[in-house]
Length: 232
Ligand SMILES: NC(=O)c1ccc[n+]([C@@H]2O[C@H](COP(=O)([O-])OP(=O)(O)OC[C@H]3O[C@@H](n4cnc5c(N)ncnc54)[C@H](OP(=O)(O)O)[C@@H]3O)[C@@H](O)[C@H]2O)c1
Image (cartoon, rainbow, N blue to C red; front, top):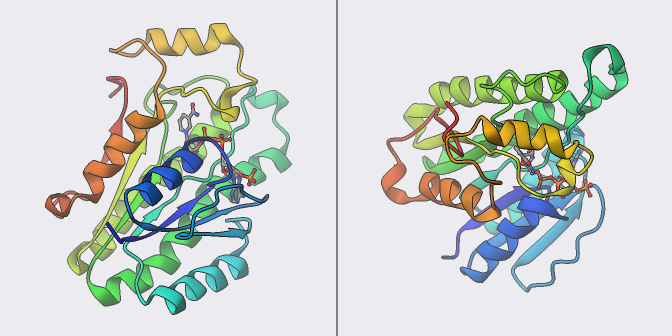
């Protein structure tokens, strides 16, 4: 579709899947991750960076805009998790999770919004998790970082709502990626049992919600969080 789409965290998991899908659909994709990525496509551009690094984010977004003269979509997919009881969670872990999840989303959104607001159009999509509405025990730091992203989504949507830029979020259920590989199977099953629709999420489920937010007809939808699996 020839959109200029930025996706953070494209080396693996959901971000990697989304990048490949949008490339197949004819979009131009700029991706990042801390380590190298093996996507090979003429319309794919990869940069190794940490989304929590303010200077790197500012320079990267400026470079993309200089090259393409527009940014149509930002998908703030990069994320890390730490699943542990609060008493077993070091402060350094909390800082790292908040740094990647909240600061990364904040910095990327701020920089991209500047360009989108000038053009009076654009779509920003953030990631929460069902761990927020479920107040999931053992995920205090992770779910707190995602709760902060939900609040960012609502407030940013309000602050830039009059400029034609929408800001929304998707809240996945467990999806089989490296992010949850260390979570005991019984904990995952207990979570799935709390869903209205009791199955693992799929990459396609996430893309479906994102595609809904990206539709031209969705220009009246902003500040929303859609959870998968029937969690509310
Ligand atoms: N999988 C689930 O069950 C689930 C459920 C709810 C929400 N989510 C959310 O979905 C999103 C994608 O998760 P996933 O399951 O696909 O995880 P994943 O397989 O672990 O992939 C995470 C991606 O983010 C990149 N990344 C991590 N930290 C980064 C940083 N500081 N700067 C730049 N890139 C970074 C990683 O690459 P590098 O390691 O090379 O940096 C990787 O490409 C996350 O926001 C996650 O919170 C996932």
